[in-house]
Image 1 (cartoon, helix red, strand yellow):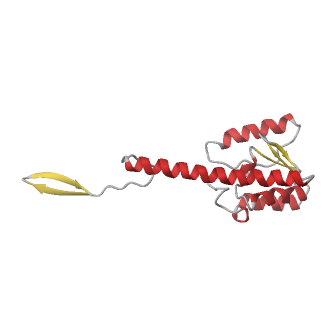
Image 2: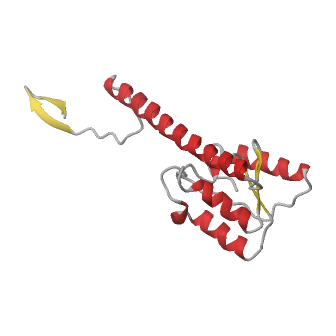
Image 3: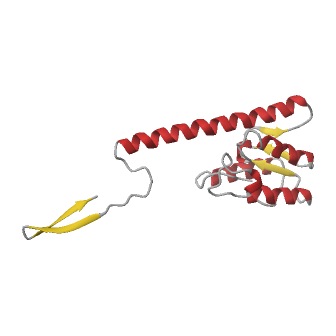
Length: 166
């Protein structure tokens, strides 16, 4: 399952496929969530996560592979339990960059929780940096990707047309 922005999806997809191939796994389905934030949107409202849960209950797959675990989500008080749910339903949960998330003992559970607590914190820091950058660009009068409208009034002065922007 690759969940990311549009530019990262091909890179993550390739990395996941190569990882699966090295282990002799067959990729039977891939899920993408274009424009969905794993930090802002609960797993209960994400179609891909819900589809994966249904498929897991039907025993349609054995391994859930992501590029990084934070692709599953970054909500610190939710995502650890989403990952654990899959493991409790017999699904191995793997990351290309972080290996397998196991739940054999209390330390595994704590590691799982800390991972998503840290991912949530990183999302907050990233949000703060982006907001500050956009504010600075806006203060400099630079385009920040927001809708920009110019309203122009044409009027005649001394026989020539003048424009006034508002």
